[in-house]
Image 1 (cartoon, rainbow, N blue to C red):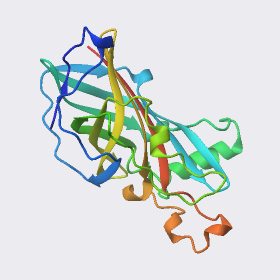
Image 2 (cartoon, helix red, strand yellow):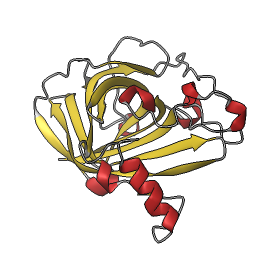
Image 3 (spheres, one colour):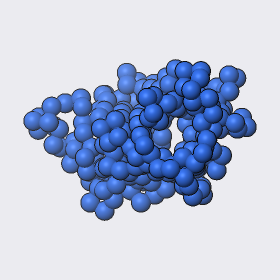
Image 4 (tube, helix red, strand yellow):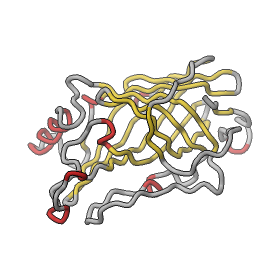
Length: 241
């Protein structure tokens, strides 16, 4: 795995820099890749500052919320980050576009936990393990996927990306017993001794078996009887010694 170079921590606004080759300039989902052994000092995540925010779309509306982290760490050896793994609690998923006291909240929460989506009874956790890091160059472009146009067309990958990405991160995302490697733009910095990372990107939920309402099976999309396969994710990570 290419490692994150932590040179220049005390200069240039304490930004983490990377000594890497240029990647392909697009968000990607591929088969699972090998995870390098995490060596060196371990930085533990700050749980209340480490979350995945999610947003799902259908032609007639949107739902959004967060999935909390339950454990995670980054490994640092000398001037390099050698790996990282984060675990998120699917059963702790929150829906933020409606009140928890609303009957609709309970119905949607239960449906998301069911075998139609996360199958949380059998797969209550999701994990992300870093496999590779590459520098984000000035000429890199975040490619956007075409979407079926409605009043609630999913946000584009370029819209979700941090304003000034510093690098591309690749890692194995495991949900519902399925592992896929994803690559996305992110910013990483050192803030008062803590490593802070932010990212935003889209995934195709059906790659992990979350296929309920699959838009690819919609006979007539004009009838709005489908759920977009695109789900937007925003990842926030903070880790301290």
